[in-house]
Length: 184
Image 1 (cartoon, rainbow, N blue to C red):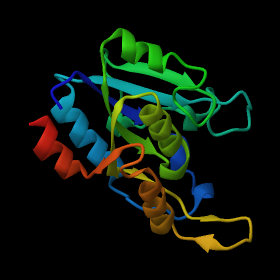
Image 2 (tube, one colour; image 1 turned 45 degrees about the horizontal axis):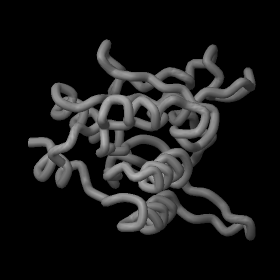
Image 3 (tube, rainbow, N blue to C red; image 1 turned 120 degrees about the vertical axis):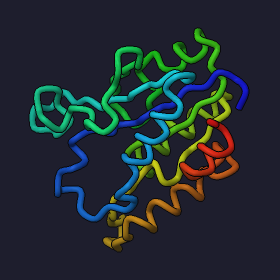
Image 4 (tube, rainbow, N blue to C red; image 1 turned 180 degrees about the vertical axis):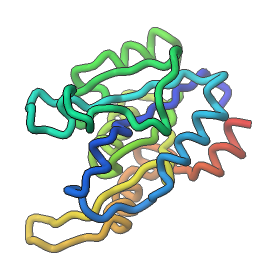
């Protein structure tokens, strides 16, 4: 990736530590994001996406502890923080404009959760024409039930979400592949 790129960290917030979400895969996702951050922060733009809610009962309400970005990926002064109220990091935000104004054509997406905000952001990034890389072990999913009350474990949800994005909207890489092939 010779072009100027941005690392987008989607919703890595304390709200996802709440037990209400249930079983989760990729317990090292945040650690992998930290590794990518450490290697890329000198030459890449880092954009933190922070989900917010107007509902005082939501874990993502700004006055609640869950709203905070997790310490392991805490923004530094040069980092950009963009807040959003929907699954896509592009809807109702200045993300697309920011990327274009700064000549960024390549994005590396990490964060929480794979089937929701990460997937939606990845799809839109690809549709908007950005060269999009999604880091499979730097994102995670929770188990969930479908409309027939059938439960799917977190790994299944994660893997199927990645499969629906692969080669259509993004190139799927692991942290190691990203570091070895693109960052160093």
